[in-house]
Length: 152
Image (cartoon, rainbow, N blue to C red; front, side, top):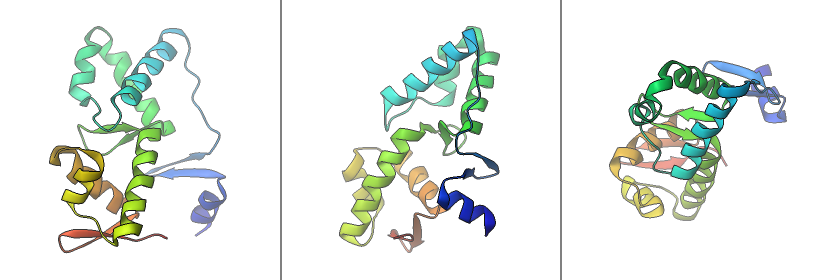
């Protein structure tokens, strides 16, 4: 309960198994910071259709070890969010989708893969993992073949 209260106040950020101060940011220097900026921009520019982690690693094949380290830092600090083994989103893109999805749920009372596809234009490759992510993060709860809003 104390962790949840601190999170609601904005003192900390709890993401799955990681807890950090809300203002915490890892300072990378030089080449690593440049790489972080490029990776972040790639995910921001891609929006709701982010590159696969495999595709991203191919883009930075000459810096694979560094890219993996930078991605791990970005995951720990919360700027990237891991949906599944191949699907990562920039936190700002995911936050906008969360709000749009929540508005859909409030308006319609429920969501199906088809209604989320209509909202986003995404394929099932993205829709199903995103719906499962929103279940895990307690925005929604699965009820049969649709989702309903868990939080108000």
